[in-house]
Length: 232
Image: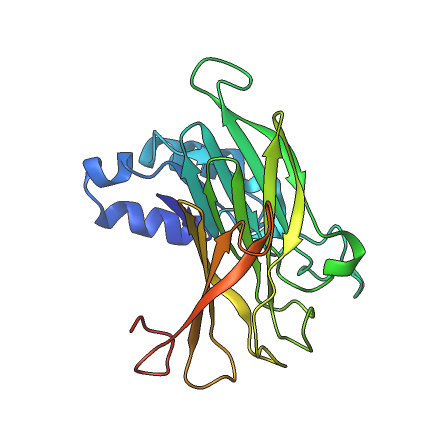
């Protein structure tokens, strides 16, 4: 588990958790707060198996995580590398880690993926999923189909290098629909949920090679029964 919280909240949480559960925490994100040496020592004693992720600042790194085999993908929707509003976070980024990169059984960062200037304030990386050589990344504030329509992107690994493949093309997505709020990918299918103004809420199913080699075409649209984003 990865915990995103301020240091005082983390220390209060440690008092309420047993040793086994505290050892189950594998990552701690401080949300960009300054952490003193004393606080770090206290948190290290409370969560001995956790990696400290404060180096990613206010990027919200770890809000979304996906693991497949030796590949770990972490979303950082608050990353502001390509922010256009005076450095306020929101353009987003995704970090890819590979096992044994930098040492036996270590997960070392191999690449940082962003949308560049076109992704400003899209919250790219708010949701991520990976399966084999393909990853799907959600950007629920993206403007691909209108203001706040959202977007989802397929990336492909070829010869060890991850690169953009395509933008998924859902039918009927409009302003403030926030397509890409949740994503998943498995066995040649990708599923993307929207949860904005649209009613009822919808999940879009895309199939690999539908419409051409390495294309991901829309196979089906599933409407939820409740209209609040819950699965039907």
